[in-house]
Image 1: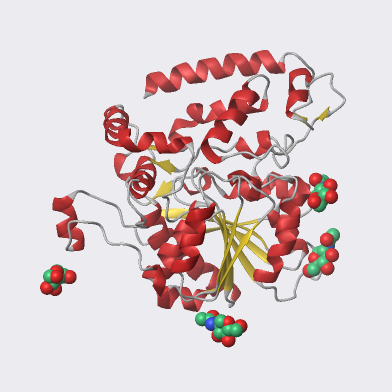
Image 2: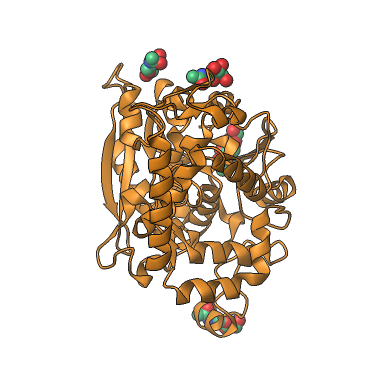
Length: 411
Ligand SMILES: *[C@@H]1O[C@H](CO)[C@@H](O)[C@H](O)[C@H]1NC(C)=O
Ligand SMILES: *[C@@H]1O[C@H](CO)[C@@H](O)[C@H](O)[C@H]1NC(C)=O
Ligand SMILES: *[C@@H]1O[C@H](CO)[C@@H](O)[C@H](O)[C@H]1NC(C)=O
Ligand SMILES: *[C@@H]1O[C@H](CO)[C@@H](O)[C@H](O)[C@H]1NC(C)=O
């Protein structure tokens, strides 16, 4: 692990030094079109955007929004940092409706701020919301634990199941107590997986805390996934063995240098490789993909990614229409679940109004799977296809701002 880390660090540093010495102190770092990146320093379609490489706090402050951080400790000892944009500076003391944004896999709260002024956080804030932003365990802002550090194996023994049953309730209880209001939950991808688990297994608490759930590119049933991630399904045991023998149980702040690989995605020709990789993993719509948001969006990937999370999704992909608990193998399953197969999540229990939004270019949250999920829900519900989006277009694309204005009706 240290060797990999070291080699990556050296390579990345060399390339970055090489790139930055090409130009002066504020080199262009963003272009309008992907092709422009090949001549980024001379191309009139390119400019310098300080959001690239900035923290969530720096971005919010730059656009003139107040920024708060709040810490909560989960029942299993993780110390989570919530971001909050309480208002947009006007009419400060008015009581506002509360929206809670839950990021997807391998991402953090910064995810919701990658589209400049058109980011969901800023649009919701300007529409009068009190915006709370989650950073789940294992992300940089939430990398502390009362007992473990990200260097410990024990730190990474979680999937979205544990995040749904510990991180989500800890955060929502805190936000509800602080604001004295019911919360509108907006989740992207795994953020929707977690909403389904939380609301189906803790229905009472969820009904107290939540007003509605907006599920963007929801992932639950995974029969029609066409993403290249499907390729890992048959190899998952081998991958698990290899990674765990190398001491890698999750990608977080302890593998910072590996993470810096994503910095390369903002430079030519690496950006081509990154766009292609993203297209293979999550789909692409060339009319929506934003060349100016891509390097900013990819900057914090991957973070907070436990191997157990990937494993859990791989197991679900390997079933027929089962959105199920983690499969520990027949013996341990008997002990834990009183059955040889892991139980399915009882999503018929969900009582919160749930609104599903999916894009037809999304290879992870496939149209047929989202419709199947919709049919299983026994609550007030909506399903809508939007703008031929691919998986990441929900966070920053040609029409993402239009989507956020549309969501106001469902919050
Ligand atoms: C924000 O989105 C709107 C509506 O889609 C678009 O017209 C506008 O150009 C975008 N502004 C920025 C700064 O990206
Ligand atoms: C700030 O929020 C208020 C609603 O609280 C809204 O009326 C106002 O237009 C927002 N300001 C900007 C610059 O959008
Ligand atoms: C386990 O399953 C058996 C048979 O279905 C049932 O009788 C028993 O109560 C179950 N035990 C638990 C702890 O759920
Ligand atoms: C569903 O919507 C109807 C009409 O808006 C409302 O009367 C009902 O209480 C809602 N049910 C739930 C479970 O939210």
